[in-house]
Amino acid sequence: MSDNKIKRKVVIVDDHPLVIEGFKNVLKDHLDFQIVGQFRKAEDFQHFMTTEVVDIILLDITLPDGNGIHICREVKQANLEIIVLGISNLSERSIVKQMLHNGANGYLLKTADSNDILSCLQGAIDGEIVLSQEIKELFDMADLRKPEDFPELTKREKQILQLLAEGKKSLEIAESLFISPLTVKTHRATLLQKFQTGSLVILINKAKEYGLL
Amino acid sequence: MSDNKIKRKVVIVDDHPLVIEGFKNVLKDHLDFQIVGQFRKAEDFQHFMTTEVVDIILLDITLPDGNGIHICREVKQANLEIIVLGISNLSERSIVKQMLHNGANGYLLKTADSNDILSCLQGAIDGEIVLSQEIKELFDMADLRKPEDFPELTKREKQILQLLAEGKKSLEIAESLFISPLTVKTHRATLLQKFQTGSLVILINKAKEYGLL
DNA sequence: ATTACAATACTCCATAGGGAGTATTTTTAA
DNA sequence: TTAAAAATACTCCCTATGGAGTATTGTAAT
Image (cartoon, rainbow over all chains, first blue to last red):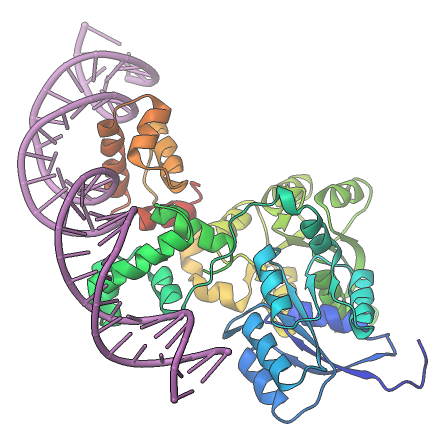
């Protein structure tokens, strides 16, 4: 667009350097955008945000030390003006919904191409809620989608899920977490219930599908 | 390196345009490499390969219309000189092993950074089997070379292992195979014994590592 | 035809897992 | 500062699983 416009400050948060490099390559010739920060960990990004002011955040959902959905809420609580676009491999409807509920201005799949990304950025700047092509299709075909939504797990549940996935028995888990085996049993039951199955193996398979393990 | 060297022809096959852009950004200032093709679908890549000659293929494992592991084998059968590096988010041992068994020259995680990627490329050119940092940590190199001492399974056992991995209960398996649940139990016990574990989850994890599932 | 091994099916026993509740304390968010 | 959610721990009951045997029939290779 115009040449003398003040560039919008963009921050990229993604644990995949290749994706960061990809965004840089997509944006590098674009006069409207200036990348002022890139982070692989939520913590680094959050620290950066305590001192810097930015316009646009490209925010991965799955980070090694945090969750993009929560980070989005924090950012928006601090400043509603900041444009937050979720980026992820995950095309689960519930995740997209959660992001949008937390105030995100849009959601891009990593399968989006340059044009898709740039038009989403422009749309978000223009105040639209933007979704990349495949996500749009996902929402159009709403009726065909599976009803099972991505379960919200608590910290403890995730912890126990992880140990179950390693093949640990309830007793071992109880010992390593210093809690009663009966408590482990409760968490396990909650997990099975949240994933709507009665099989540990299915539970773990689904958790892997959702990228929880 | 040297300036007048003939550049190595690189092809990128990945369904994520951002990853392709990322590789382009990482390689763009490197005098040794020249990107001669980029593909989002296996089919397009395979068509390209019928007419073109390349030196290095950066090959994603998960493609919308194919499997990088199979594609790797095809490529290597046609020309062993071509360097194939698997790239993927998946850090499962069995997948890496399958790639290397099919002749891949290495395996990079998408969490690898530029330096990691470039040093892997150089290593592969120098004839090494290269793995990105995180993958190296997952394995010790010695483990890769020695033949696997995974248990010999009978046809029926493999069949039942498969069904167990799908989360089926003994009773369901018995019904679908028209045998007694007690027989299923025997096979299951044999499997657990052969894999030297008392946990179904561990059994299935090991089976996946060995590429049996 | 003999010898393996596979596949089948059973016994008995002990423990782990799954289903459905209730209840208290602690943490976190509104 | 409350109200909600998470984490803790328990009850009872029943079924599934795991471990250790034994035994018969089927099948494939020598």
